[in-house]
Image 1 (spheres, rainbow, N blue to C red):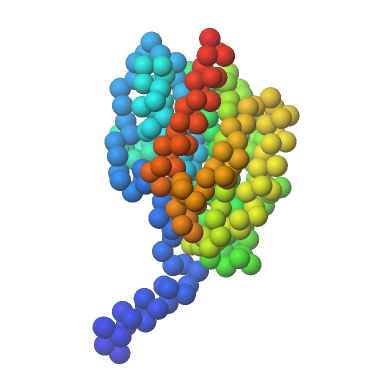
Image 2 (image 1 turned 180 degrees about the horizontal axis):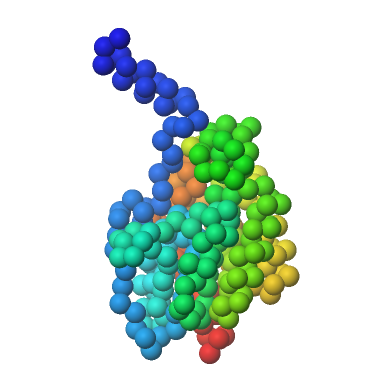
Length: 247
């Protein structure tokens, strides 16, 4: 078989395999913007934790809160240009102490969910699958268990906490497959934990639902420019309310 035929065979396999190229990430991830900044030590500190949906709005939240707060998110590594994707609670329980570090946080806005409910080849793993019959990375029960551990760590920081629930999954999303029926199930489990711990919920699911046709990409959980602007405005509004309440 010549090289051309081999290439065609590999492309055909990639098109049908569970290991086909994953969906594109958030616009902010793709544009490789600069995430490090020089904080104003006179301002309160805000930490944003979350997956690529939050990466899509973090820099705009920072701009909206300029002069009011220093807005951080974890970086991929020291001095990195890119913000770290905090992924699901499986990663969260092992990384939360590193993300909190030793900085005094005034407000922490956090989210986990889309990675927990994505399909993977084995429970708890990160090798994505397009097969609806494969397991979620974390079952609803495991998600709740992990999230409870994370929330207790966050509460110990003394910061005011805001949990952003999981945004809608459109029909037809794949690589990885996500079931559109899953976000409400995972959000319900999260809501119980937040109620038990006195944590405010920023209901981004309800915020997005009526305007998905305008703000979300087709067959992709990520948002377009208009969507990222809308999410940033909502997140910045809630964070500013919490900053004012802290004062």
